[in-house]
Image 1 (cartoon, rainbow, N blue to C red):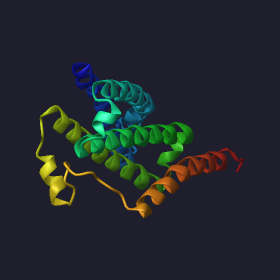
Image 2: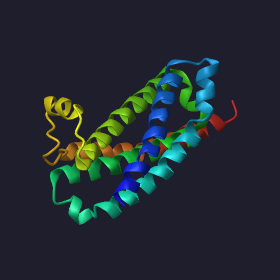
Image 3: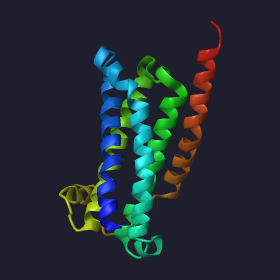
Length: 187
């Protein structure tokens, strides 16, 4: 199953990388090309989530969770892969639920720009950790080491960060719902 995971993981990486580029371009531009890119954003994110789930399951078939959890690198990769799946599924939900209104106003555009940049970073780290597991480390590991994260040691979040993440997970759909209702009210 190892070769299948290595092959399959390229699909969510491609779709989510394209999604990140689209988010960034659309946040910075209102031109016809940016609008055309935005029309394919939801399908790209959906295909990324579907192919990501398949790659995730294949990864669990190659390295069962009890095996992955015996090494810090394995735990970090599993954690980053899980974050990536939920992150991109949340961005998909936000963009699908709110629709074109995510681009209304400077604040919304800055939020979407930030989401695109954050998604790019998360995807890069997940791929780097997977490359280490596969035996192909990258120079990004040295960059991560410079900012204080040793990829061969288990990465821990302080409790306050976990609380903040939980609040954001709840807040994103709530904000999307409020936005949608506000836009549907007659003026």
